[in-house]
Length: 253
Ligand code: PEP
Image 1 (spheres, rainbow, N blue to C red):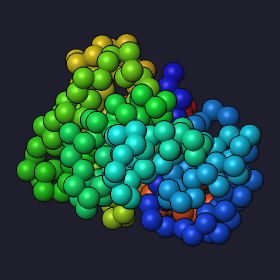
Image 2 (image 1 turned 30 degrees about the vertical axis):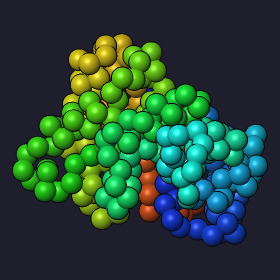
Image 3 (image 1 turned 90 degrees about the horizontal axis):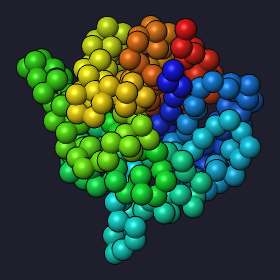
């Protein structure tokens, strides 16, 4: 049975003071949750501080991006070893906002993924189609290309350390959630792809999250789907009550 995972992507929101307040509320509201992985991905500048706040809690820390090199002359970038020593366990890779605004490609996703694994970080690899691609009927082609290039040369035994986040771009921050059936259809496609290209046992072990306008009132329908193992939450992760409600609704029946 795959353990559900709910991750909050704060994006470029929350000062350190605001983040501290949010973390304190979440620790109080979620202290007794045991069977769900809870992950917070605040901005880089908050990581080490929030890592201290989360110590001996049931909430884990993740970053929103990383560079693939261990170190070097890459002004403004952050490496895997730096995230690790800041207390991160997870890292988002290939978020659609990175792809859209900062030139992230499937090739850079692949390099970051390898570096995350080498540095003991669990990568959450984001894939998904935009509205034009969905309307053109090329969603599955696009997903399979993102998987093929993004996971290229990743050893099969590392697959279960990777989390895939299916995030239809048209549903991110738009208030338009994919229906549970639309999401399940693509999650099933992803698991079948993993099964064909790795093995059915490895595909069954890999966690696939849905992301895109997840809210307390739609998480139950999503998590009830066979191949949906959690959620990557943007907007609703900025509010303690909403994020806590999403976590509490995420038990697999
Ligand atoms: C995200 O940032 O990955 C996301 C899914 O955002 P939202 O929940 O706001 O759509």
